[in-house]
Image (cartoon, rainbow, N blue to C red; front, top):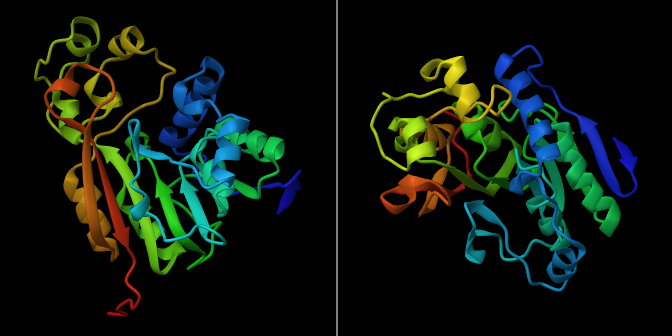
Length: 280
């Protein structure tokens, strides 16, 4: 592992030829350049407060994760912030005492975490990689996986849950946020430009298969991140199939857009890897 100041960096194994990985890597690098709110690092005052014991992070929208979803103490805990670059959650958890690894598909997002780590002398490692492939990380390496809403940018999620289960120690915790797939049934043009809810798409949804290139270009630009819907069977059932026990659940409206007044746009789960794992 090469150190940069007190922040480490290493390259993970990623699907370089996977079009979804390649496109969304470049797209999120550009989101950093454009100042997307999820790419703006926290300031020194946030890190100072976290070191003093006052901190919060978000999984879904702007909703702070309940503190009782976390271990009793983060001091010395090994935490993986999965697909969670941007200099936000990872540095805060590091300042709260955790040994943090941030894995993300975007080099520019990881650079935001490294910037905060160097600025505020935090112990934090960054890994470039695909959230479906954590082979750069060892079995039973972490006490907590923190996975905010990001698998919406991944074409499949079951491998994500299997890898999370593998890298967690027995008794480890997975905190995951994800999109309500039902928000994708609506016509994006009517929603974005007229604030109307017009049912148009059958699920599962992908920007690539449900919108023409012309429509994508008009709505968000062809270089924007590509999104995919995932069913609750894939999200919640996938966690259960991987071996997790779900211990808590939350839902919140999407923080923007016309669906916010009618339905939850986000779900969050707290799941645990059992202390004793069946070998069957």
